[in-house]
Image (cartoon, rainbow, N blue to C red; front, side, top):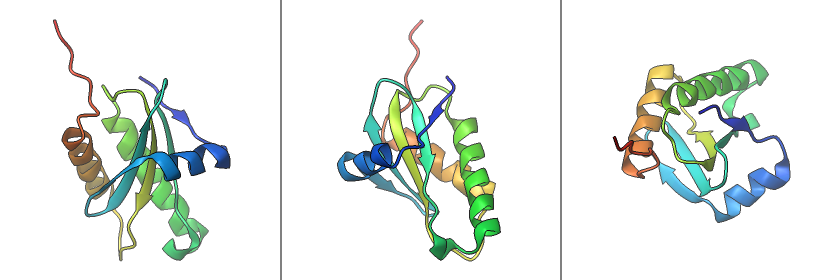
Length: 110
C-alpha cells in the first residue's frame, strides 16, 4: 500500500492533539486511525541547518516506506529525537518495533 503525504498544517496539528504517542530510542511516532495511510515527518530547527534536517527527513521517509507493507490505514507523524548522528538502520529498527508493539500491521488470513 502506498502512503499519502500529509502536507496541511491543520491535518498535522489534529494528529498531534488527538493521536497516540509511542516512543523509541531514535524517534517518536504519533498515529491516529484514518481511512487511508498517510504520513508526515516533523523536523524542527533544533535538529540543525536545512541540510541536516532534509537528510533526517529522507532517512525517516525511506525507513517508513520499507516498513509500510501491511500497515493498517492511519495517519502517522514521525518525529526524530535529538542525537549526535542519525542512521537509516536505527530508524528502520525503531519503526519496526513500534509497528509490532502497537499491532498496526494487518495480519493476512488465508
